[in-house]
Amino acid sequence: MHATRDTRGFAFESTLSKVARVLTGQYGVTVAFSPDGPRVEPGRIVIPDYEFNGEVERDVLIGYLDLLVARAKHASLAQLDALPSGVAANLAQVIEDRRVCGRLLDEYPGARWFIGKLRVHAAERVRQRWPKLHWRDRLVWLVERALWDEPPTRTEASHSLLAALHAAEDLLHEARASRSTAQSIAAAQALVARVRALSAGEVNSMAFTADPVEDIDTETAASSSVPLEDDDTVLPDQDSANSPPSDRSGGAQADNAVGMGQSLADAQQPSARSEGEAGNVTAAASQARLSIPLATEFDDIRDLTGQGDSAAWRELRAQARADTAPLKEKLERALSADERTRWRREQERGEIDRTALAKLATSPGYRTPFRTQRPAKGRDVAVTLLIDRSGSMAGRKIELARQCAAALCDALTQLSFDCEVLGYCSVESAPMKQLYERQRAAGADLRRYNRFVERLDLKVYKRFGATDLSGIAAIDCGHENPDGEALAWAATRLADHQAERRILMMFSDGYPSTGDGDPQVLRSDLRERVAAIGKRGIELVGIGVLTDAVEDFYPHNVVVSRLAELPSTVFSVLSSMLLTR
Image 1 (cartoon, rainbow, N blue to C red):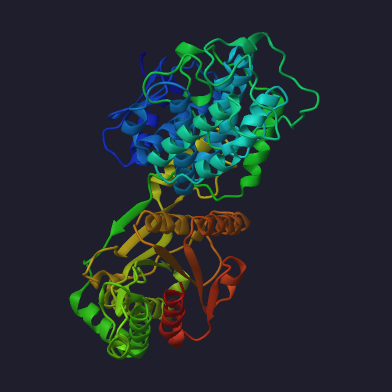
Image 2: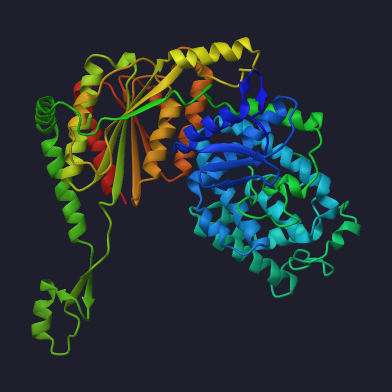
């Protein structure tokens, strides 16, 4: 360890600790530098002790921080540490990193730049050590590339490695779909078993088999004296700066660990990146087109569940029920009818099926007059309502949105559906503005950001599981509307809620906007977020309040042209979705 280091006029180690506390949401988390990093400890994140001399190296260290924060927040470190050291453990960390970094990027898109820097940095380190790596460690590296859709370089593309990947394509697909640490470990163990079977000749494959001189269990690096470049296997030599990194970092490292999981004690200092690699990073970052905030620590999230005025809520609920009571009763009848028809008839045991009693009386040999109910989770649905609170919603629009939220939540709660009501806007923040001025005065490159002086103002009016709906009466207006960031926040909350189906309804009255952001980037950002949410299995609907702007962003959208029809129209749309299996 060494004294706190300083760069660009501020305490770098202290600043990383502050960022770690914001990202993890845990007070007391600290960041330290050590030659045996990277790793995560209780209350501490350890980053490799590099000597940096410029912004590129600083960004690599921030990338390490983002990677380790993702592990601390979303991975079960105990399960990973319990694995015996070896190729299965390294593969499990690779798969788990792919999963947790994906979740971090959904929450904090600004991490994409720094993880891209870290990815190029790791690729260069692997390139330097490639001739001395065991076959199994080369396989781990190529699995990492495959998980993030990153093609191997010419040097890495040996026949035996490509054959192993080809034979395990189905397992790689399962690894990409991992949703927990346990699934990542299981996928890694299945990959090891498949490659061992391939090497032993137990798997039929039209591709090459693993080299007999070295396989996944070989203890000597025979490949150090074997040429690797095959003229008939030429793949483009490129690295994806947008691909999150992955490699094992928890506990002690294997001697031949590769990628981001390797500590400085096990490898040489990294050499400078080539100009071509730096160009790839810059180009990829410029193509991301996400709206990245300068900082997120100033964003404010307030839970107002149950904190609304009781009298105002009762009045609001009475108005809402007057508008939607007939629709609710119709939905209840439809749901009940659907559930009543879900029976297995002609069973040998169960409850008596009254429709079979006549047959039982007239047919002496009849033995199946019973029925059993089919297991159905028709009401295991979580619904989130996300409301645009921008200034343009003021007046009648926000009144109807409030009434609509009251009607939907009141009805859904009575029908045993879990729901949540959220609101968002952005407002100017004095501390964030001061940070922006300091960064600009210091000559920092701010071109990749698109929100400089406004913080997010996010409110939870009714959270999942709460029975007190009075907070909905407190729905109000703010200033601007960065739709993409707010949508990602709401989708993350919804994805973390256990349910068979998840529905997210977005209320908007126009295009995304902030006081200091590029409108084109904001629109591109929203399209990217909508696409990402769809891939996560969330059913997303855009509700346009006196605007057809939602048609430009949401594949499933509804335009409400008359404010008075907002509650009934939205309720009808939601009812149709709930009845569709």
